Length: 493
Image (tube, rainbow, N blue to C red):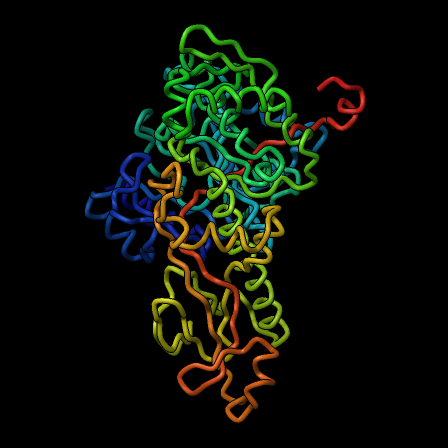
């Protein structure tokens, strides 16, 4: 009963805008807990019934928790910070489980920077007294952190505040910390998804299909055998010629040609073949970016190794999804500025911008009139976002016709006439947003056509960018802090 009273008292000391989640040990037990929130009374009821052992803070929406899990993680943070000041970590809200070297620090991220934050877990290679590898963790959307005075499942003792949030509110996240979270890259994606590999889509315009060899080598890096399936980026990958032929849906002769082309372009340094097995010494991520001469790395997605045969189409899809993400962000910023100009608080007014997957027929907030097989009909003033094929083509380094073809089911689902390729490409859902312009009811047809308007259902409509229902997992990539341009000039790449 004392635990429940302590927990209930702690509710009064927490900021009112924090969203809490009941936990057992360290884990939430409610299904779909990331999608639904509980109020404070419901959280208290869970504790009083003895169902929960504590409460966790739902992260994201401005709250970023840095979990320093062990002394090696603290040293890693100092190393990554470089010359930057770590004093913010001593001033901001912080708490600990009581175990040596363990603590979490909470920071505030302004909404304008939310799109730069992703969940990251950086392992140190040092194992703690519990047998687990220590790590530095950036906790964001989809995660929670257990708060004091919840009970730690290992020690059986309560979490304790280092800096109470009322006396030491969360400090603004420094720019170097946001930059580190945005740009950190691990060669492997996660323990649960061993077949995924990171694909920098914008490199495809420079290297073409040769990239499939580079991605295969990174996927089958030899370090996986020594590190329990985790890729530590040894720079050496091994795969069979037959396996590569099947994955890439190309003949063995074509795979050998791709190997030679990749070596010539600098994607790989060398390769050796012994029987059916090929060992590839691949070029590092940073050097490949330098060879391509990219000023901006662009979107990176975690893709399945079995999808490498359709790499050119994947590159277009990733750019399309990234364009939609950027469009949503820009629209949200415009909406915030309009609300501020009215002297109102944007945090207290729900956004009218709706994602493609949640568009629905209603008056508020989407104002969607109807949905057809090709179009989404919207009233005037609808807050839309999507991907312009012209903008996608510009980022993709290809023509608008190529983008249109890659995002068209008539192309995706029809096999090539000679080699019968593209058999495994999934169909794509695409719709055009049409905004109703009621004030143009009597407008001359020739004049409306010049402005690109469409006349349907006895009304003029203004076309907006397409919306594509794409599910690629966009991820970030580490860029080394030192300059590599000078090394290129010296011919050391």
